[in-house]
Amino acid sequence: MSNWRTLEDLYSLYYKEIFRYLLQRTRNRDLALDLAQDTFLKAFHGLASFKGNSSVKTWLYTIAHNTFINWYRRETRYSSYPIEEIQPLEQDIYRLPEDAVTQKAEQEQLLKAILSLKDDYQHVIILREFQELSYEEMTDILDWKLSKVKTNLHRAKLELRKHLQRTEVDTNEM
Image (tube, rainbow, N blue to C red):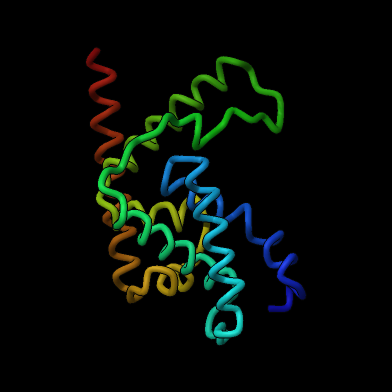
């Protein structure tokens, strides 16, 4: 808890990260905003119950993950959204337009491959590779054993690799 002193500090430190995680899970900006707000409301109301057994970051990710799961269970259908809503074209440095188009196509191909995986595999890929969380943080968030996290991550990467290789073969044959 040393990185923050007030609720505002907590919010400013972790809001963008939690929002990005929820945006990757929902693929809907407005929904991710709502779920992020719900996550922080739950965290603020439950702050007194935080025991400090994990980091505040892990605790917030756990709340965000459970908030997403609860929303997902309530939804009857799960729509897909264009990649622009997930990965807006924001440039931090100058790139050639051709490079930007190539990168966008690669991102879209990767996202489609990730979305083709089963949910457990999607969870571990997003938490580890996009959110850059440790294995310990992932075990706390998903409430899994370390061996299950590592096994699912390994299998997810294998499946992702197979899917991308099949896509590459299909593209080369055309």
